[in-house]
Image (cartoon, rainbow, N blue to C red):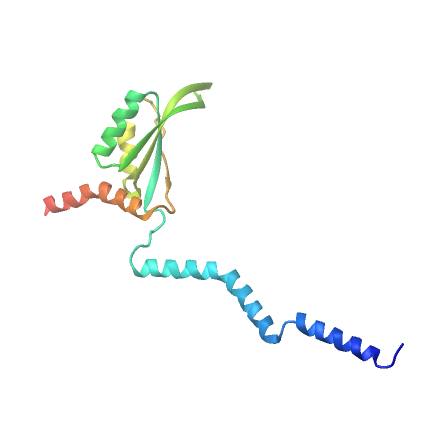
Length: 176
């Protein structure tokens, strides 16, 4: 070995290591970038919800409901659907054909073709809707079940309220 060769190698290695070693500033910036990218979606969601609340566009989960009613045929489906919407018990009723229901009735297992009514309404109208269906449905025990809507398209949910609750606003004005 020649004298001084080791120090030349050491200098080269130090130069290479320095070139590929991040500075403290670069490490700090990289850490901040990682932290921001991890927390940014949560932060933006919080900002969106806060702004939405401030601007009055917030939705209270459970304000609206979907109710489900099975019916034996299209004539009953149409008749009930039209009356439900006409009486402002719901803003919209979807008639969904092609169901097969398997159930126990009077100690027998039955299988029938049915249609499903998917009814969108204000939660305050579910009891009134259930009563209407019980009185106008051909089955002895009509299926009326509901689930509260946790979230959805705000303009659509507002439309449901506008349609269904418009009858209450009109009644309030005529009662005065």
